[in-house]
Length: 493
Image 1: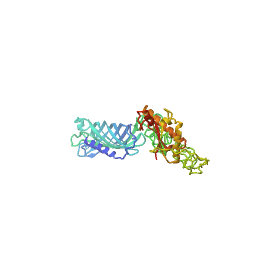
Image 2 (image 1 turned 90 degrees about the vertical axis):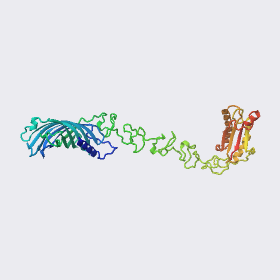
Image 3 (image 1 turned 180 degrees about the vertical axis):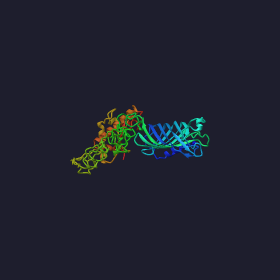
Image 4 (image 1 turned 60 degrees about the horizontal axis):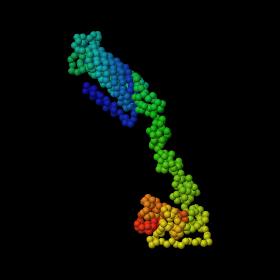
């Protein structure tokens, strides 16, 4: 038995040395099939007779190979043989013998795909043998056989090496050589000797494959080589039974809503290129991949800029600016002197700030300009408006009494066009903090709105509602509370 195991290990090692890619699936022609084989050949016996006396045998077998997706395949074989073995030896009586035999057995087959149509294999198994030693010249039984000196049936060991050459998908031509080993020494009728009897055979024949695996999903690829055995009915598949994926994006054609995606482009579960910002332009074409949601974009995925001023429409406060006109960050034409006439239309571009101009940006000539008196600031540089005098009681509206004071500040604001101002509203501690903050902010904003409506840019003003914080007098008396209800205007630069 140790010889058989040694041969098995040797064959498996040699056949597995054929290179094969670990990432490739192979179709093995004998995978999942039943194979019927008929062969004939020559026998050469090794017994107590020293000279070779070739005879012949015929073999029939039935095999089943398990499904595989590699170059290797295992199968089971049941077989039957009949034939003759013989020997010659001038020193023995008789000098020629001829033994007929029949056997039936089974074992396993290891087969490798060594080429497109070449399949070397190894078989190992056992068989039960019936044999009948006779004279080689007159065909009568030899003496010990006739006397019943030994049983004429026994269990043998079988081994075979061969190659099948595929002619068609179902038919192959076979060449092989094998050995059959007896545990005894009776085949030549001589029951003495140091070695067990055995014989070699060299055979040729044909094998026919049938009863191949069924095609469970009806895609035309048998289950034995179908990598995707549950393909829906009617779906086109490749040679391995998997749905076609023409663009190689991992989504089969029958599910792919974008079947012509370029190679290497990331796709979603529908097979369409990913569009992270949802602007309708896929990421691989999108030059502006982080466009805000629902913003209209051009063919490159960038926000539309209808007037071509470099500020996209969704941020452009002046969307119809003439071509090549220089604009600010809001998309509006620059107005360097702040006279309300953009530079590209301004015929007097350096008009002093606050000067009244006509539609061409040039100063309007007036007979007389009467300016209100200059405002007086406190020592701290602050102008304080009393809430009780300058605002409607309990509201944020400005009383007419406050206008003269505000006009004084307005003159200074226009005289110094680069100045910045802080407007802070305060209350006493009556009422809730939430209400006090709301009223103080509203009053400060009313003051700011007055300045803005009279030509002071909004970005020069900072408005704060500070509620009952920072009291300038005690809130325990009515007089103190009156002082705490105020609006403070401060020049901050």
